[in-house]
Length: 512
Image (cartoon, rainbow, N blue to C red; front, side, top):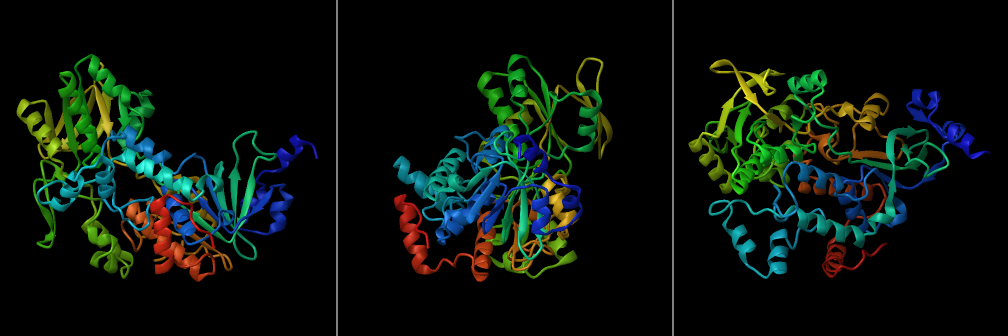
């Protein structure tokens, strides 16, 4: 058959699109090549990486795992997001010392590794003094990427990676799943290929950027994508412009990214002697410690809610984790609201900078709800902000939206198809509903299982899903469930010890 005719045939047919369960013959009729592999993980980010790490350490051979991804390395997306949100390689991220995506044992911790590498006891002294005598110690983001690169090579991750864009996952008649991939243009004989597997794991990250309605309306109406920006998109031009002339920046949001953007603006102001003014708008303005009772309170002040990590530490292995596994429906929503909310670590450095800004009159923070944004005659951006004192107009040269990566899961093509045709449903917070072992409810197919971890599952029985340690806990639950189903085996004390020694020595994992 001619190559062009093969490409034309090797695509999704209406019959495939209309059927939720695909017989093998229906896929063959469409001319889509089928590749068999026991387990497919979709995403290729840190979520995929940590599951593959667990399975490889458990002895699963590389031939039994396929990673489908449009990125070249597990840390690529996270590296981009940290960089544009003002956390370059030498800076430290909001992660615990023992939360290592490259090391399932968490020992040695990042602090111990840094102390050994730099021949200094300072990281260890810092950890011993946290959080009373020092801020929480956290790793440099560049060190996180380097350690993942080493582990990626050690477990043979690149050999399992197949580049392309996943279009959908459909259940297979007789059990298992078909995962449809669109390879990069010109790399295959057909437009689509399909991977037939017993197990599928989804770790697709955040569905996309969420712009606040007034900012989205402004960008669409005026076509201005340079002065109204999201902190999670490239916006280095804002800082470069402020270095050439004085300007006013409106920062919106009260989380970790807002604090990082503020610190960048303040660092530049100090480093280059700039005259930048900052107007900071909080939707909820926190004035002090807050919480339902004495044993469940969070520090706060000057608009911020302070917390060392995304969630209380007991989420990852204490009473709160055990409690959440028992809750369903409205009770689970209530608990999420109680412990959730936007927060950021309290860092001494930018606390001093904000204090200096308030005293100098160039940093102003207030509570308000922005009704709309419109251009003024002088070329500035005017925001109509409603607060306790009524409605006022605030002008700025730039607006940086730091409200987060919280688009609806239906905006992700694979997740939308799973909701429409795969039997998946939403949890009480609107994300994918998963079991306690992270199998997506309603998607079972014969003896096969479909799992999901990461931000798409927030609202389930385990709260800290979108953190390093949360991804590792999810991977461990899935690996144990797969072992129960006969795929791989549980990592017992002897294998765990021998494999840790191999990890410490940098030797490849031992299969079988």
